[in-house]
Length: 398
Image 1 (cartoon, rainbow, N blue to C red):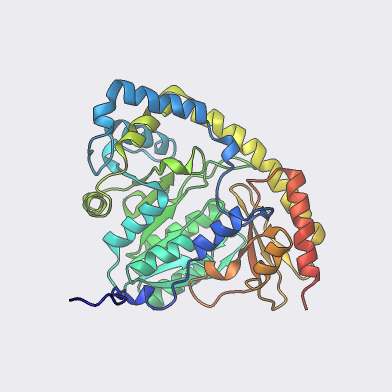
Image 2 (image 1 turned 90 degrees about the vertical axis):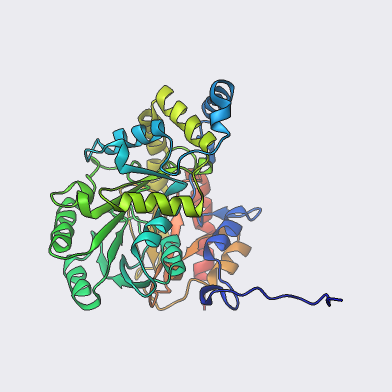
């Protein structure tokens, strides 16, 4: 008789011992009752076009239900690929065959890591960088090296030095309204980065989930559109921030044999993104003006950005700094006083406010005096009250 004893599943080294889940922790803070949360990286659900989306799903199930509920191709629905190609073509000529549909940009990051990085390979990232990208690259056993940034993004001289020293396979960037800092790479900086990459054999993974959410001035073209960059760049886009993250749809734009590799990897990981979602979103996008909807989102988010930035400037200690994002979802605070914001989070939640401690956004040694604050899910009066609570937390520090 087999004894009923606890069984321990074998785990890879990354998940051995106590498994940290900083993304999950942020969602806990986001949903805590009575807490004004600046912690999440989620859009405002009040702006989801639920009636229009319901109509699109109903139409597909009524007119094309069997196809919507069947397996589909790993590349993605041809109609949605054509729509994605048309949107990318505003900046960079793109054919449907150059589009791989993904379940959001998070899966896109993981797929790029799977097909490009062997265990032990090096990938360069901004320091700080997107938390879930750090997790994805860690999962494939890649070695991440953070590259110095300033107010305009990654520093070209530091990038060139890191390439010479570490011989990376790829560089991962979020040039528009970066997560977590909110910074945007200037046009001159994009050209300088392209020149550095053009003198190397390093591929670029350009992640652009926030690029449509610009508040100030015209949108900057992606690095992928610069001379010589299209063939060496995987450009990642998502509908999560401009439509609804629950539909889990995005895409990768690329050229050459890597697109077949991405399709094979997609088939191995999830087979396909849900056919029902793809067909319904293609229907929605063919019937509605997404850009008009984005303009409405931008108007509200700009007002909330102004409320948060002005409030932070008024309350932060003199030594602290805060970014003023030209779009996107986040302000980045650096206290510059040697303090650690991680243990402050529990205290803040007790005071009815939450933020994202900055340490988890660093691939290497973190600046622990940092924090990320999202401004998009709360109206200005709620932002003001949340900052009042946060000010009390900072004032009570030893």
